[in-house]
Every structure is written in structure tokens, then in C-alpha cells.
Amino acid sequence: MTSTIAAPLTEGFARAILASDPTKDSAAMAAARNALIDFFACAIAGASDRTTGLLAHAIGAQAPGEAILIGSAGRADPLAAAVVNAYAGHVLDYDDVHSSVRGHPTTVIIPALLALASERALTAEALIAAYIVGLEAMARLGLSLGSRHYENGFHATATLGPIGAAAAICHLIQATPEQTAVALGLAATQSSGLRLQFGFDAKPYHAGMAARSGLLAARLAMAGFGGAPDFLDNPVGFHSAYAFGAGRPEAVLEHWGDPWQIVSPGLTLKAYPCCTASHPVASLGIELHREGLEADAIESITFTYPPGADAALVVTHPSNGIEARFSPEYVFSAALIDGALRLDHFDERPVSPRLMALARRASRRHDETAPRMSSDPTTRFVILDIVKTSGETIRRRFDGLPGLADPAEKFDETTGSNAAFAEIPSLVRSMRSSDGLQRLLALLGQELRPNRT
Image 1: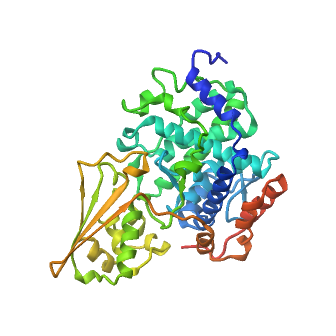
Image 2: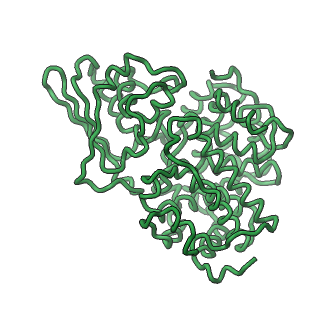
Image 3: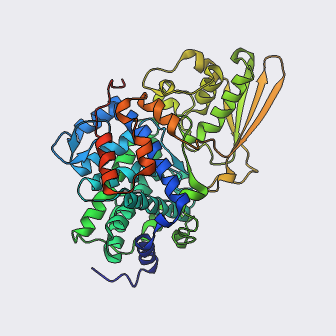
């Protein structure tokens, strides 16, 4: 392989990935364990989604292999398992999000690591540490790209995910800096995924693509497969192709691990099973429901966002619950009328006319005087203005994002308090050894019944 001396940024990135030791940071390790519980809550439920089965069949996941398929007694080839498990984790759009990524890191990185665990003897603590490093790589790269990457149409879960997954694997297996640089470049050349797929089955498939690509990139590099060792430094490299002039490549190493991105700004564990950008209006709707506001008393609703803040909310008038995940108009209406947001608000069935009757009275605007929404969580806000049929007005504002501090209740909800999986949260909080990880794999690789339709 060509020396990386001419690629100082890529080499520095690779060395930071390999030299990191997040096990020394108790806050980072605790946050990672919480994230794993949250991911398993989403993936176990998502495993029984109809489309997860379609995907598994289409890619031949029934073929013999050693890797677990979450929520299934079947086993698969590790690359196929990475695709299916990542898809399952994201299919309900209930999985965590990170502001620096502007996407969903855990549902990509953990399935890639679990697939590796079927091939190698790993400890639970080492796997958790590798996850933190992969998230750090994904987040620092997200910060370095700037806002145009996402706003111009790329889905960061899909474009940054392969690199984060490859970074996590290279850290875990302690690849050389040269192998890591090639693996990162091979992951970057597989980066793809467009936001135009939001509201379709292809959106969670982005997570599956990314997990597989990261795992494959690391495997290829370790096998001696060649690739460019300078994806961050090359004049036609990653930032040239994806940043649209807004990038700062050097940001990938700024404050690396100080603090860890999983600690600050930290992950948002979703409180509602829909697009994160719609969560502030969900919380406002539930608050107004508790105050007794009736839908029939509302003449009109206006949501005001900072520029760019509703870029992911690509649906105004959804026809089914999948599309409705990306509609703040629907989300607010469901939250106000029903006082809660459940998984069945966002399934494949047609949306409820009683909810859409209110949603059609809602509109959006942007406050062009506000800072453009960025990876800085303080730039995120929503202002809600309601005009009642009586002429009275209501104004509410929500800054930042709501989230969960502890995903235990969510785990019980999504798994139906199924006794077969009940041990998982406590195991994840305590496991350190290879025995603990093997126990986790055995618990995850059980059939979930009855299947969700």
C-alpha cells in the first residue's frame, strides 16, 4: 500500500480511531449502554415488521451463516445479517439520532459490530468502546461537512454510516493505520443515500446499506484489498464530492474524544416513533391535549421553523402512517387529539380522516432572521401559533429536542414485555466479558411472536 505520509488528515483520523480508549470515560460507557438498550428496543420490534421480512428474503438472509438475526431464531451470513438488523433498527423510525451526524448512528454501527461478533471472540466492553469510537468518527465527519450535504439531498445516516461502521470495526480489531485508512476510503466510496426516499421502505434500507458497506470495507482492507488511502486529503476526495463548498475537513480531528460525542452533545433517544424534526410539535400537542384544547376549537395552526429545520419533514398531507412520520402537520394533530403518539399511528394503514381534518388546517413558515439550523442543537426551535374559532390565539415555543433519559420503559413497550427478551436491559448495563456478549447474542437471536403486521 502507498504510504499515507502525503495524506496527513486521513492518517491522523485513522490513528485517532485506533488510539482511542473510551473505556476510561464512565459517562461515555454509560451513555453507550443506554444507546444499546434503545437500539434493541427498536430492532426487536422492527424485526417483525412486514418489510423486514421482505428484505431478508430478497437478499437471501435465509442462507446458512453464523450471525444472529435479531428477533429471529435464524442465522445468516454476517454481511446479510448486518443489512437486516440495521434495517430492523430503523424501520419504525424510533431509533436514536445525533445532531452532529444529523442522522442515526447506532442503527448502523451496532449491527456491523454484532455481525463481527459472530466471527471473532470479542468482549462486551471492547464492542461498546468500538461503538463509541465509530460514533465519534461519524459525528466528527458530520461536523466537518457543514449543512449543505444534508440540505442538498443526502441522507447522512447512509453517507456517514459506512465510515462510522468501518471505523468501529478497525478500532475493535486493531487494524494498522494503513489498513484503517484504506478501509475508511473503501467505506467512503460506498457512501450513498438520498433523502427523497423518506417515507418509503428505502429509507431504513439506507441503514442496512451503510452497516453492510462499513463491514465489507473493513474486511476488504484487512484482506489486503487496495483502495485510496487519502479520502480526506485528496482534491477529489470526500469533502470535494459531498460538502458543496461548506466543509472544514480539519474539523474531523478537532476535540476528538474531548468530550466524546456520545456525551456532548449526546444522543437523543426518541420519545416518539417518527422523524426527530417533528418531535417538538409532538410535545407541544401532548401538552395542549393535557390542557384540554379541543381540535374543533382550532381555526388554523402555523409552525415557524428556523431555515433548514424542517428539511427532513418532506410530507405535508400523508396518505399512510409511514409517510406520516415525516409530517409535522399529522404528528401535531395525532398528539393533540389522542394525547400520545403510538406505533400504530405510523403503520402502513391509511391515515385517520379525523386526524387529517385537523392536519389540513396547519401550515409552515420560516423565520429568515433566525440562524440557519445546524449541528448546534441551540439553533433548533419551533414556534406554534394557533388561532381558535373564537378569535383567541395561542403561542408556544419549543427549543431543542425532547428525548428519553432511560429507554427501559420504551424497551418494555416495543417488545410487549416479552419474557424472552426481558433480561436484555439489565445484561447490557452490566456486561463486560465475552461471556456477557455471547449471552446477549443468544437472547437477541430468539423468535419474537406474535409478528407485527
